[in-house]
Length: 366
Image 1 (cartoon, rainbow, N blue to C red):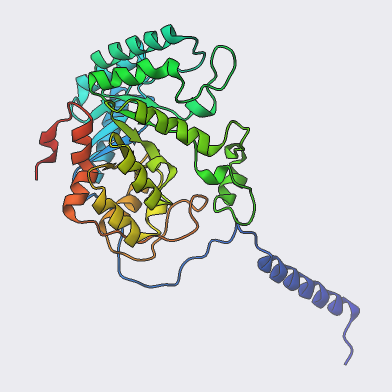
Image 2: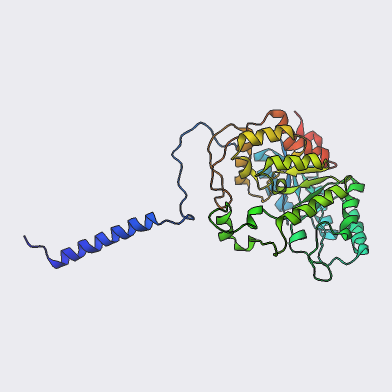
């Protein structure tokens, strides 16, 4: 039986295609590889927090009545009692946001003021900034939010990097202490952003997909230096209450974070954007939350309601090996901490009530 050259050619092409496809699947990149777990274990998504909570770390540029109405619907579904908007701005812009809140939902939203640190000159500059902040607080702001641009990008009038602990900024921190409002401060970025971008770096995928996040010791300064500047401010202003955003980038080393909390009694921490670190060390993190239950606050950071259930599940359940929502942040799975109710209440709202003045406590009836 003869086989035509045409049939042989078709078979050869099919074999080549099959082989090429198989090779390509074997050469799948790390970015593409994201398998669905076959593990079957008890557990379910938690879409509503067990207790009403304060999100101390949110950002909303628009606080118009229309936006507030939409936010409230999502907040109610999750049992979010109060949103703290850290992007309040200053002056008339901030006052407008607060007026909109007071006309719509005066007990459900809180606004923090901001300071533009760019172009700092002398001590008089710091005093003027503190005076403006004082007016913002009198206008209704409940605290100060400091963005990571301080320490990373802000420069003084001479073009030098403005250090977080620059003495010209002291009047600002002192004013917050004087007026009894907290400072929520984000300093630096994860330490891995400064490390070599190689196979040992856990944030390799994030740095590849977001290359502008890569830092070096000269761009703009070493991680350790920036963090130390922040701690210098905490120590220099013991009468000012600080909330260290993102657990001060020490959620991956809770023993070290505990030492820092012991050393600086005016420092508190928020859990925004680091739930993936906590969810991979459930026993260690649970012990930390119990020990430092009076110093930790709930926060999410980016306003994406669909991501909150992962926070609730990590904090409230004892579920095992459930997915995180953003692979480039964490390619590992989560485990629940199963925190005691009293610890959850402090994390969700009691600690916030103790730090942020004027919160409506009637929203948290037990």
